Image 1 (cartoon, rainbow, N blue to C red):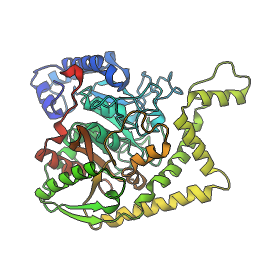
Image 2: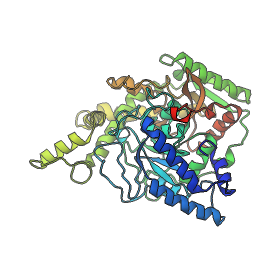
Image 3: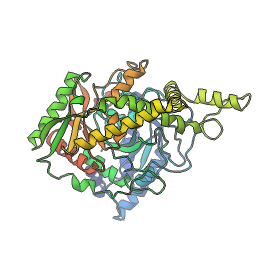
Image 4: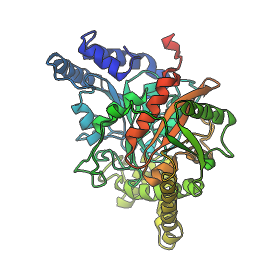
Length: 486
């Protein structure tokens, strides 16, 4: 029951081959049996999941079920969930019980998806390896000595290991696409504003976007369909209509114009990863697509731009966690200043502190124009690069990451090396564009991701392009060989 696609599971539920409760129990049993090896979950909500599954069974019996009714999902622990701990992977929020559901959570509940639990993540979504979590690192299901990527590593690992059918994630600079590549699953970051950010704990408000992890583009299309759309609670939510993503999947792609940025295939890219990506692009050519080299000349500036803009926004967003209004409070403070200082010092980890300090510095008097304003100007140039590219091509492709998943601890003491791991994903967030990573041929037994970037609100087209490759190949069907599975 834990391997088929969402449409296959949905058909089996409707045919009463098994119940939604039985399906949920199967996933809960897998979590209990396997998650000690991976640490993908912070909280497992078994009682809540089973209650939701029984409601799904009632809908199925009444003939009132939708395509997602009874399909178990996990949520990144950055989304508020009513009555359930929402920690953001931090000590600061270790005891926070959310009083309401995020819009994304509400919509997937309304679609009939039982929530299995909340997945592990880098603290406040700050990290590229899922090693900054207060709850310990997540391990890659393909190799327990390697990272799953971050910050949504718990969600990616849970899908890869078969500990849920699909999972939500957030992407600020690659935090869905990079772990999707490292864990061999499909991950989509929609256009900024496509999915509501209400109830999603903010890291960098102009960059954060909710998205989906699933086995395939077809599965991701169904989940994204349910969670996308305008939300009056979110002032950054887009009024643009949401198309029928599933209906677009089978559209033809012959005549598709693919752009390959020369900046994505240069120094720093592992040759074996490059060969895997190029093999996937040849598959697209066999399907009738044409390929041309393009240039995104300002994209190499994405990493320094991001690490000015994102820390600036995080320093503002995290100011609310002070031991008074929200979050961890130190014991026996001497006075108000001591309360603030010790609560924040104890509640935040090293990477979060680093980014808060950088952000405060670049926003301070005398440095704002030199750093933050300049970064915003460069951000516009990066967006212009993409705008010009989409006048020539339909989709941009390249590697999702420069290498396969690296070893746990390999980059923990080198923040710059860690930051450079997002070199191919950050520009998409700065421009507010949709991006998607799908598995292609593994290298030395480890997954590799192909990144697809589209123009604004072209998620449906990206899912269609990914789906057509997945119909022609079986890379997305490969699964890790967990010891307890053998």
